[in-house]
Image (cartoon, rainbow, N blue to C red; front, side):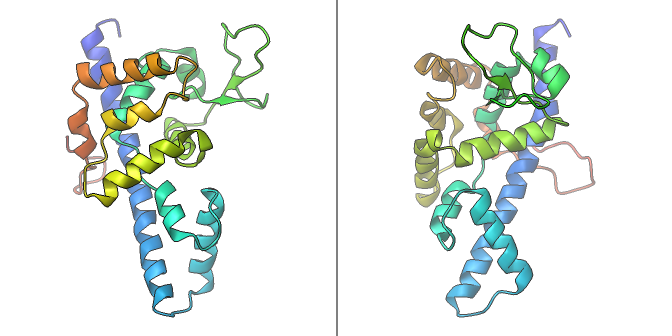
Length: 221
């Protein structure tokens, strides 16, 4: 699609529902953790299914078993404005080889050769590849897991938790400032992401939710 405005519109309409779906899955898991934690505080014994599920969540998010607060700090949403801006920047608005051939919206690096793609312009001495996925939504889920678990984004998670604790919106523009380690460009990368959010007026999408009506309905924005 050559026309920039149309290309952006198609990109947002394709990617936003994926981000919202992952966020809704995460919120549902947060609610389940709260419910199970409340039952345990009442002295109730969890059944095998709930106990196994909770153990799996602690393991997935890299949190010590029983540390519910630590789990909830990591198990939280990614602001749609931020995710959209990063996916647009990392994928060239959906035009890069990585997204076309490997459904890689966020340019995540890996050091395995299995099913992943070698950057054509990789610097001499570098050995990283770009992680490939079977579907776009798998790329979004891996991106959320990356921000929610990697030690490089501890400050991002701390600021997000403070926003939630104070009853404030989870603000993508503010949290972008904690992603200097996402790219070798550091602060220049943050400036670019914030510019994409501002120029494309993405902040209002942080309040977007999937429609509760018929399956396949458009997201409410």
